[in-house]
Length: 282
Length: 233
Image (cartoon, rainbow over all chains, first blue to last red; front, side, top):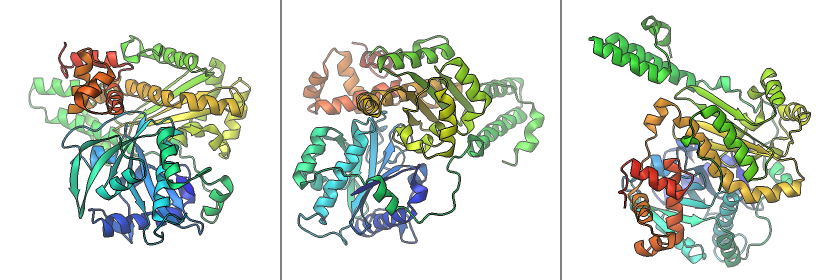
C-alpha cells in the first residue's frame, strides 16, 4: 500500500519519514555509493527541506519498503541544481506539467525474491504505478526521473521502458546515473499493473493513513502567516544594503547616478544613504 | 485554447482579471484567484474575480493571513483540493463567510514554485456536486497547471529585477526542435527527422513554451526568433 507524505501532512509522519531517510541512506550511500550526506544513518539533502511530495510504499507491518520523491520542474530541483552533469551543461526541461522524480528505491533487505506481494519486483511496480497515478491525478503529463542503469533495466523489464532520455549517462559513485522520461498515461499505468498483477486502489484510505501517523501530540498551528517568513525581509534588506554601499562607494557623478538608477530599478525608490546603519544587522 | 496571452497586454492589473475571467469561461468555473509572493522584488500580488463585496470583506477581516487555501496549499507540489483543508480551523470561518457571497467550498489551489523562492497560488471554484467536481477536475487539471505557471511567470517577470534573472535558456534539443517547427514541420515530422518519439518532441515543446512564456508553439517560435535563439526560415 502507498502513502503520500507532503508539506501538508509531514509533521504527522516523522516515524515514516525517518524510516524512509534511513532506507535512502542504505541504498544510495551504502549500496550505490553515491556522494550523499548521511547523518545519524539518515540521508537528507536540502531538497527535502523544500516540501517535496514523497510517495512511500508500506508493507502490512507498517514498515517503509520503498519510496520516491517528486518536485516541480518550475522551481528548484535536482536536475537543475545538482545533477547538471547529466545534462552536459544544458539547461533542464521546465514545464508546469512535468515533475522530477528522484531517490527512487526499494528495500531489498526486507523484501523477498520472486513475485509475491512481498517481493522486490511487486514493491517496485507498485511504487512506479502509484507515483505515475499520483502525478496524473495532479494534472501532470510527464515525469523526468533520475535513475541508475539497474533501475533502468527494471523499468524495461516491467513493461515500463522510458520513452526517451535527456542528457547522458554520467558516473555517480560506484554506478552511473541517467535522466529518463516517462509519460503519466493510463496506458503506461495499466501496463505496469498488468505486469505485476496489481489490482484495486493503491493508496491507503483515511483510516489506515490515521493509523500510520505518529501518536497524537498537543495541537500546534499548521498555518504559518506570511509575516513569519523571515527570509524575504532579509533579501530586501540585503538589496537595500547593497544599494546603499554602491551609492556610498561611488567616486564620480556617473557612478553615483548609475547607483541611483540601479537602486530605483531594484527597489522602486531612491534610498537615502543614511539608512545604511540599521540595515547592517540582517 | 482561447485563453489570452498576458504579456501581450498593456495594462497588467485589468488584464490579469480578464485572464481569470477567460479561464473561468473556458473551463466552466465560477471564480478564480491568483496570489503570488516574489521574495526578490519583495512584492505580493493578488488578483481575483470574486464579487467586489466579498473582496472587501475578505481584506477587511484579514482573511489573507489565515486562508488555508493560500497558506497551507503553498507547501504542496500538487494541486490542493479544498476538501483536504476542511480540518483546518480557519477553513470553516472563511468558507462560511464566503458562502454568503455565493462562493462554493468546492475548489482547489494550484501551487507554482519558481526558481527564486517565488511562489504563486492559483485557485478556482465551482459550485457543483462532488461527482461533477471530480469529473471536471480530471478534465482540466493539466490545463490549470499550465495556466497557473503562465500567470505566475508573467506576474514575476513584470518586475524589472526578476525579468533580468529569468532570461529564457533553451537546451540544444529545444532549439533544434523549435527550429524545425519554424521551418514548417509538424510534430511528427520533427520526430521522424530527429529519430525521436513524438512524445519527446511534445515534452520539449511544452518546456520551450513555458520558458518563453508562450501559450502556443507558434508564439514560442516567434519569441525564439525575436530573441535570436533560432533563425527565421
